[in-house]
Length: 337
Image (cartoon, rainbow, N blue to C red; front, top):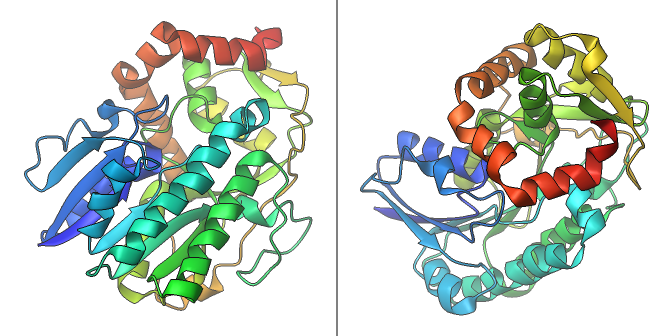
């Protein structure tokens, strides 16, 4: 059996990767390490918690006594654990630095001691490139993060690279565009807008809504990571993008149309500080290894909308019973309701 450690495996992308990996690799034994902060939930792994090839550890990557031994016994580490929401980083940047940078440092220090480690995948983001007016960001482009979240991810990204260059830790770095799919915490734009629209609650659209994002289905992201574990070159960076550049206002209309809800639910709100206008990544390098996205955006968005429509058990307790979620929503969007 191959021991695989997935940090942040109870989060959105991490839980989808755990599920994908268990289904794809019969010889993988997976340990999920997750702190279970607001977006990391046991419910995200409800269907694999009893799998004999999966173990769950409740702990902080920044706690070396907990995370260190898990890294040292692993052959593969896939490091998703991070604070990820730009809006939250603007309100409170400190936790992003502690988790994204300092937590990554703790893992990398353990990776130096891991005799059997063959791959350390540092999950980064396309946001490290900053706003891109035209064209697409390549892996060799300068990093220009413009908010505390993307800056913390850029720091972790380069720190991981330095552990390859300095200590020969088998690191690869991935920079993915915006993910969507099931189990995404309902403060992110697609699940927020879908679940609001289901309940006929206004959907808060920042600014003029013309900010552009490239959307990548989480399953395609998982397939890319799986390929890179096998075929990636240590010390290299790989962009992962869906090739679906969509303006936020158009995305909003697609969601409302998919739910047969009126456009009158759209409520413009003041733009957030430092809101990057456009992200886009060049995926030529990854495609050269044989990967390409398999989920057309129209199909993926339709299926995602349907998942949230059919799984109110998962999101409704968060939106209706979680005081922290209500407080955050009121602070961000109270003026729209």
